[in-house]
Length: 158
Ligand code: SME
Image (cartoon, helix red, strand yellow):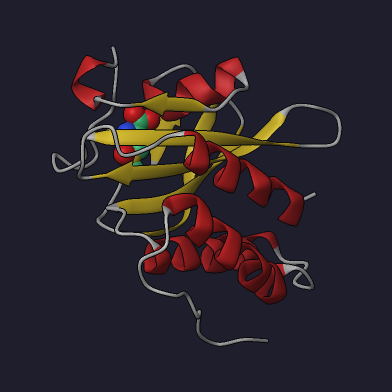
């Protein structure tokens, strides 16, 4: 198992995801424990990009409950449909928010967060089992490369 990531400098966002993918896969593919996988995925993303916060919220009953993350302290629980995370859960789709101040009901865990992407992960039966939330201090920091790079991570949890 590799213990550190190796990423060339000066790559585009899409190129960085492409270089990162086999390295994350090598670290977590044979790990059966969900929390261990989430923890290393969060750490790898935080180390590779200048994101403010990277972490998981698990569906537990009618709430999302905080899971492994990297970054500042965060809200522990989010109701279904609330905030960007709760909306990505109830709508079962990736949500990109270019400006969090313009997203009705955005939950500001950190006042430094300006833009956000939330990707739901599904059970084989189709229901959302957890979401991956990534926050940035930069406005409009997330695009197609992030959507593709982060949705690809679903393959690690299948
Ligand atoms: N901003 C998120 C809440 C989680 S934190 O930012 C870590 C939301 O609106 O769902």
